[in-house]
Image (cartoon, rainbow, N blue to C red; front, top):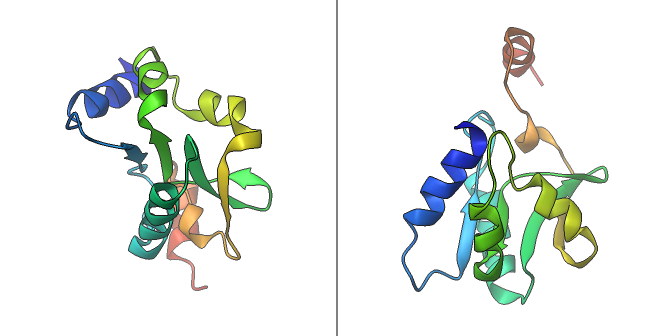
Length: 120
């Protein structure tokens, strides 16, 4: 159950030749295809085990994990996510700096939703 079950399900659906997995959150409505492509392309061109955008020093989404980290992800349980791996491999992660954090807006509450609707 929890986040970890979704991660395990995704890993189980990967083709055997996959280089890794790219995870996005469903509650980030301003995520852009440009950012997804940017993370994916940078990850595939690198030898990094993990790749993610960073805004004002904070890890963002999407997050790409190499094949060698999929086993660690598959062992997650409960509400654990890949955040622990991002922390563990922070120093060696390929970080893509963001100039604007709009794509990272996480909509979990009614207040978040109202903020989403505000003119920018």
